Amino acid sequence: MLQLTDVDVAALLEKTDVVGTVREVFLAHAAGRTVLPEESCLRWTNDEGDACRSLNMPGLVEIDGRRIAGTKVINASLGNPARGLARAGGLILLFDLTTARPVCALDAAHISAGRTAAVSVLATELLWAAPARAVAVVGAGALAEAHLELALRRWPSVRQVRLHDRVRERATDLAERLGDTHRTVAFDVTATAEQAVREADLVIPVTTTTSGYIPADWIAEGAVVVNVSLDDLTPEALSAADQVVVDDWSLVAADTTRILGRMHRAGDVLPPPRHRAPNPSAPARPAVEVTAELCDLVDGSAEGRTAATDRIIVNPFGMSLHDVAVAGRIYQEFLT
Ligand SMILES: NC(=O)c1ccc[n+]([C@@H]2O[C@H](COP(=O)([O-])OP(=O)(O)OC[C@H]3O[C@@H](n4cnc5c(N)ncnc54)[C@H](O)[C@@H]3O)[C@@H](O)[C@H]2O)c1
Image (cartoon, helix red, strand yellow):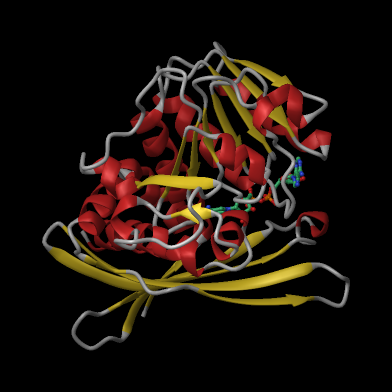
């Protein structure tokens, strides 16, 4: 079995169109050319009291007339940054379609962060009222860096990035690193999350919080919020949004821990149109209406934004299909 290290993967990722790949995956998903099982999650607390988890995320997707199958195992310990380690790390395994044997193991960190940023960027471009000028990022870790590197390379419209982290040095370090490359952008490190979020036209929470702290009234008219870390918004912020878009409803519906999954279990979420029962029972007026899945926006079957003032929340649970597809493209690139 071929093994590609993080250095190998980082070099090959440079040659891969990650946004284009996630777009093709959404089209394949809309056309039924995917298999997306539920993910499994093992959680524990280590001897030092840190929350740890291991996610196993299998998937199969057909793109370029070829099927790619595999799984991502991504583990994390909340104590790792204090140990000088990345919070999350793992492996992507690619499978031979005929024998089912694993053929390639790739370090997952760069692919996982890169595909997450690519989904956020694609979703934003599909839903923004105008190209983003003021971007707020809460949390200044690996995912913040991956998002800002991709967004700033792609969007010359951005004039200001407001960064907040509860550990201020993480935000100042990231602002300095990015400021060296992006000299036309003003990087402001804010003392509070509220100062970062208010008046931003794109908000990206990438923290590790498990309790919501972004209320509805922090979110500006017309803003897009890409809720990457999934638990930063209060239930009221989700209810007050003009639109809530998910990446894949089945993953959200199967989830028991994140805010949208919990609200769904409590009967407070109306699924996206394709997943609604013909005669839904209570609740008559759910608190949150999911208006679309991202694959519907990508293939044009859902409308997206309807007014420049809409506040739109994207809840990207994270789909294995993107990891497997990007890993498959990297593997092909390595072989050629
Ligand atoms: N939805 C997806 O597809 C997807 C994919 C990958 C990662 N994620 C999530 O993204 C998040 C960030 O991942 P990462 O690898 O960058 O983590 P990280 O540990 O590298 O960075 C997180 C940063 O957030 C800061 N932080 C935590 N709570 C905060 C709060 N309440 N306010 C302000 N700052 C806070 C921490 O100090 C840290 O600097 C994680 O929750 C991870 O699970 C989501």
